[in-house]
Length: 208
Image 1 (spheres, rainbow, N blue to C red):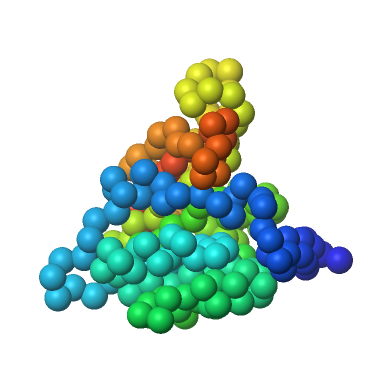
Image 2: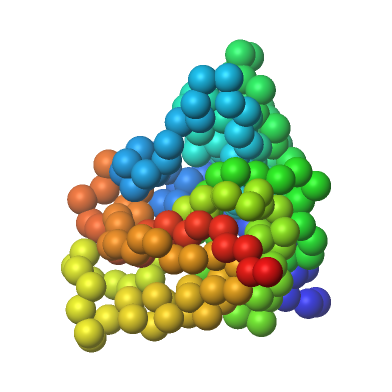
């Protein structure tokens, strides 16, 4: 069994459960998105995609911000649940896709990843970066959330934050410019214990 097949089976098994108790399946919209995601101008059409969307709560929220919203996941069970929970007045397009295999057919102005990238084996992360770049418009903005280290919500020389910042620059630097990095809280809703992470805002870079 190769890495991709193992990942697909692993996540589909989790998402196929009748009651999903995993912490990553019960989280609010990140504060960083509400602070940094800009609404499209009036009469402006922009597309957004939620990468590794799970139940699709981010994709649904982005639609309310005025975007044509899409969401995909490697797990068919996750997409089935997202479609089952889709409000009747929503036009979010949910579908199954493996982001390490090929770019998306659509081009996106906004790309959001809350917790997908750090679950991908390192030998496939370059594929991910290239396919994300191939799915973005020339002025796209990419928001990335990763579970970067444990402990307090602080960036210190003793944690893994420096490694992750360097790794993100090296992985995405050919395609995106890192414009913002900060500590974020990825804790599940209603839990007091923090799950520290890093938030990255990257903008599309075209080199001629």
